[in-house]
Length: 226
Image 1 (cartoon, rainbow, N blue to C red):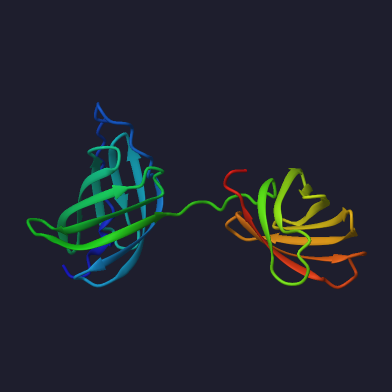
Image 2: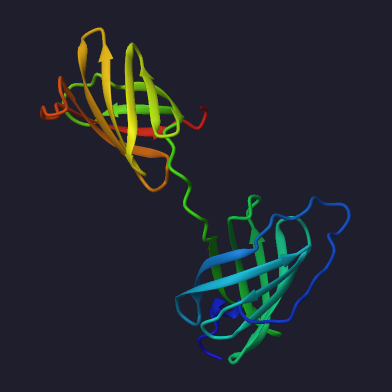
């Protein structure tokens, strides 16, 4: 009975209920989740899998065999039950509109809440792409490339415009672009590599041939508007 927590989301009976008329279809939460639970039983982290059919949810935890079933009662809330070696009880889960996170409370049958939890869906990494608009800031040295940098991508080839400066480059690795630049004040080389979030990069640049040492550093953040 003691260490129940959201490991509670586990093994279980299938419950499939059609979407209730009068509210929008709920988001899909089918997939693998990392769940952190806190409360009277302490703190723990579990990996669970969820399967959704219409408004019905079934959860499983291969590590301990506990089980969870539930039903969307509107487009964001799940009322559910858990059962396992440590007992059985209830769950109330609130799901984000995009189906990528949830939070809620749980308790034993007939009792008040014993703890709370948050869950984040384990999503596949986004494919790295340079295409789009980037807000670039200097991070040391001259600041020739600051401001908006707009990039297009075709296969491994990348072309970017940063004000009057044009960069022509190619992906040399899945997350790194090596380029040359030219503009009113001269020409040189530019190298930048993307972080795993695919929404930011770090870069260095220099003048002349790519054998010259770097003279400046930049960081870029993807512009959500472009």
